[in-house]
Image (cartoon, rainbow, N blue to C red; front, side, top):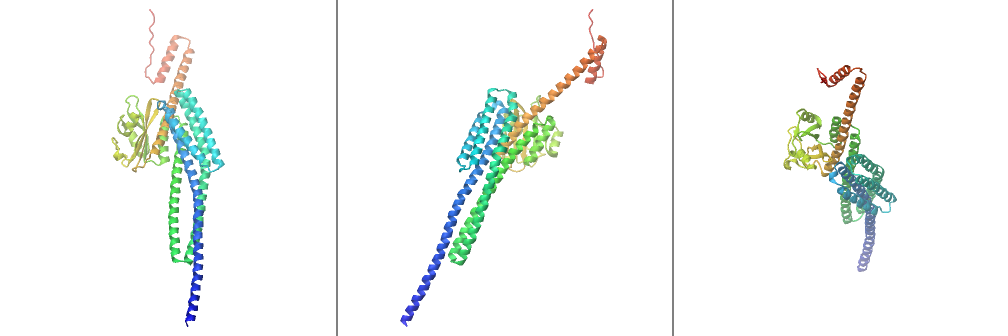
Length: 447
């Protein structure tokens, strides 16, 4: 009996050892799978991080190019500002390009784009040197469309195609990672259900952690994509507005187009423009959006220099940004705009002259950002140039009309044969032009 018990105990021990060996093998398989998944994920994470860094660097370059355009337009519209900010922004952009090429990870297309951007910046440097070597208001005005065209070509032909490709690679990589992660999760879950409860708990915990990590990554990707899309939309809209304004020569039509396009392009609560009255120096509203804009125009709404955000922008010739108007000293509430919660007032200046103020308002606290302020100031500079061009065109047309009238009267006088007839023609034509009821020519005859 003892021998039988001993034999049975030995056999049970052998089964236990066999089962232990099998379970141990299963555990080793699970651990090997976990390790393999971990190292595979680490390799994928490096690729994913590289792709994300590339998208981020390209987005930063887009932003720096926009900043360089804004500062260049500012310097050309207002020579008193100088070109120091342009030089600093140029250096920042060059540094960002070096970061891009350093992190190209052997991508020949990225290296080539870095070289092309540097070539474009070399062209920018030559254009800027020509303008600085020949300083004049006319040369600055003529240079603005050339610089804008250079920046537009740089964005359209160089930066955007590479960014689009990098973005596609980034999301393809993300999709692959998600698919592989799902496969690994299914495998680990199946193995865990077959074996130890403790292994199941461990795998479930890892799955939850991985899922949370990927949800966080996904949220970051969506946030990054939204931020880049917003910057790209702002740049594209600014360029489009600039192009449209350059073709409008009627000052009144110009103002209407500015307020309507800015409001609808960026979904602002309200937009209006004030122009400086040269006689009183008051800021008189010249255009506004919606029924509120019509009501303000009808009652001749105006603001004195130095009063409120608009008056302060005109007086200091600097953009005034109030993310929360309730905490802004000197802010003037308008009963017709009761929902205003944030506001930006950008001066419309050219040279030493303040032509007016471009004012935008939003109906949420912090609804406007520093980037909105930069964008509105850039548009204000473009509006200044457009207003100057429109006024110059109007004066030229008036001069042509006067010269045409003078030429016509001269021709009619030359066709007369007597002094009396010439005086009669002169009086008649002058009365017709001026609308006078009674026109006379009095001649003092020598005694």
